[in-house]
Length: 486
Image (cartoon, rainbow, N blue to C red; front, side, top):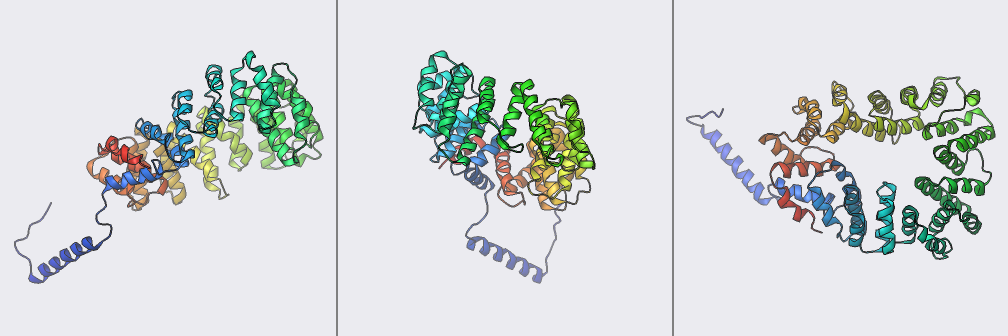
């Protein structure tokens, strides 16, 4: 309630008058003046995901799947920056836009090639789409080789033969073409391997590794076996040999197990054998019981890893918890992907807690991804970790998980912290609530202030605050033309 006073002392009135004059003079002399949250939000979005933004920001922001963001992406395909054009096109392809149509909007063969390879990596290319694009032939050579492999048409054999022997094409292009021919019964990989011997060992190994990865994604089991024969003997701890064994385990388990056993036999000491065992975990194959004695169990870590390797594949998520709690990074890498796939709360919580206790470099990514997965499935499990949380980094990651979820249950976990003593915590909580779309007028004003930089939000979250603020104000559609300006 505003209290009205009948009189003021002359001293008080003079002081108040001086304050008003001083503030007015400051406002007039300030080079910035009053910050308009709408203008500030437009500027933040323009410099992050709009016309003056960056591909990395676009990729991250696109994870929110806001319906109106497609307008920004459509404009991004014509951005002056080639990398922005490619990123926008990839994001639109992921959202279901026609890939041939998107390719027609890109300017260069390399841009179109980048979109094709990304679509291939995301399993967005089927035989029909690949054949349509390959017929156009306006892309770079490695993308064309991939397209011909995916299209899988007998009529393309001549084009594949030409690519495999094209001296001007990259070694990977020629290798993909040769592997496709080999898969079809036409010997071609041996000639490619022989020709590849002219490059340096490092370049040769890198190209073979890339070809293995591509051939695995194509599911070319015949070509993979031929490559194994041509690669020949390699050390037990060789990365290419490990990649080949893992690929065989997935495409042809019987041959894969034989190759795995050979790798175990070549390992000179049990102290170096753990990564070989993890190949079975990664490939989802059971471990041969006769090899169990090779795996040590003389401490908690080695025991936990051996138990994981020799547990049935469908029970490994539960068995992985012990190794995760001890911070075994290879297990954590595998467990994170598996836990996200299965929405396994127990494993996700183990990953979050183990990474939140650790201070190893790069461990924050485990915590963040676990928080995001927990936030979408069981936000209350994050909420209980906010209570009496003293680590500011952990607090921020928890809120990021709730923010990513964008649901009413996730917002409910953030509501108690809207009045927190720490400004950054209040802003993070506000953003989590805003994601669920339930703000009053005062909270909307605070969100605009946070978007403009006055709320202590991490810089990478300000674009999200700006987007939600403009949406809450009904200014989003009107602002998009300015957001996408170069």
